[in-house]
Length: 84
Image (tube, rainbow, N blue to C red; front, side, top):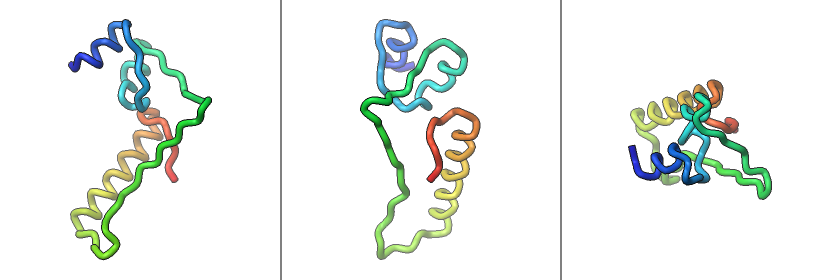
């Protein structure tokens, strides 16, 4: 376990991270999380590739797998967010 995680889990520190970084600990009640609402913090993640490149079949498969996994994690409450 990293020193950073240990500090947060033992109590003498706090951090701003994606919910998923400590989802297990939050869901188990070992940590508390609160959403930052003022200011609003939005983060959009995107798949990006060069406009003159076609995605290979393996790259398309990885992209679809990531989409499915992220959707599953959002549905199960392991990742806070919304699918656009």
